Image (tube, rainbow, N blue to C red):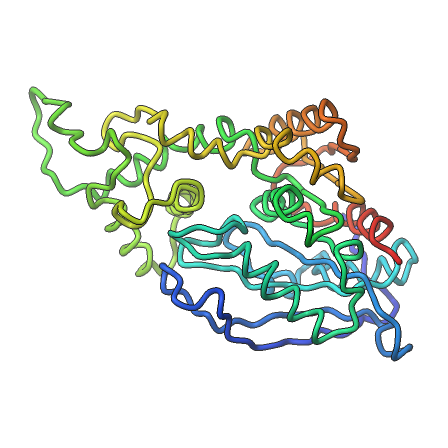
Length: 365
């Protein structure tokens, strides 16, 4: 990969510290005091009265806004990437916002959940007004967009569906969709990881499976999820399997929260038999973008731009879901741009060379 770094001005990163009212008292006990990083283009200080479109960067699982501003070997961070695109006149100047939405469960899906917190409200009701008050933005949905990859891509398309009054255009890179493929295939591994934290002794010989499973058939934790989370908190270096496990638990907390259940959410698979619990899985599918297009058709059609892409070697099989999503959008008469490329799920921020100019053209004054 050829390293691209702009020879032009870098712009300015401003860091705000604020205490979120929306996240105060969240169920995971995550801090409500957050840092918000805002990148201002070089043109911001050149004309004192000029106002700019705004782009919100929704990072993927285990990420935070600040991670997209870190120094990176052999490639740009997002601020450097935007600065180069502006300098090369591939897009006009825009303000880029980097929210911190990290949680004890490794992130969230940018939706409201009684088990995690009100992260959709945090973005739309708190951060958007905060940025509009503090900076010279074009403060309307016609000039405001969001973009992201993976969980962030999911957040972008869901916000385009459910919060079109806030966003005028969205870009979804390899976003979570077609849950049967992208999540279902990994749950057997998660069950194996959780089984390490079961406490009932095992004995060779006859097994009464009905007695063994007890409440597991209704998606309730028998204690192993709680013990896994407690052990994870103490890990200095979690394994890949443990990270995937907490990711699936985060998804359960996002898609099937239940204040009456242990840990505040239910599980979609029987912890002992591995059977999918269809009543619980139905709750997950209520959040699957491929099944929401018709419901939110009017909101999607109101957007000024929808960009979706995915690598055709995505290891989470998201290219299949992305194709279905594009097909459903076409069937609903929703104008969008869908692209594929020869890569997998990892290290694809270079694709923002395509999506960010697309967003700017959709949102420019």
